[in-house]
Image (tube, rainbow, N blue to C red):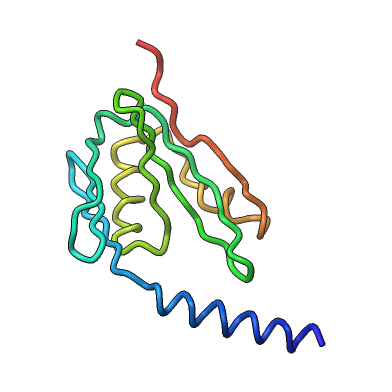
Length: 128
């Protein structure tokens, strides 16, 4: 019984995800990051303006989604990214270059254990 329900939900979730799939692409540079959705710019921030970086997981029923939030206090905005976005690996690599205090093992810390939020502050800008 459970297997049948799981199969039904999995098919429904997968179909819905495919129907709603959009092109979300991160363009990562030395100075800034931009998000494009279906070729339209959604947002842009400068690395120098980042005051906090937070990682966590979202439980999507049968899988987890690793997320990174970039906080820019001067704009009172949080720029949300996730591993399903094109360019996410480039984002992570550039983040490590620009914020060397971030632990190399942060990914493992947020991924395990599965289906737990595992929120963690990766970077907090020191007070001036």
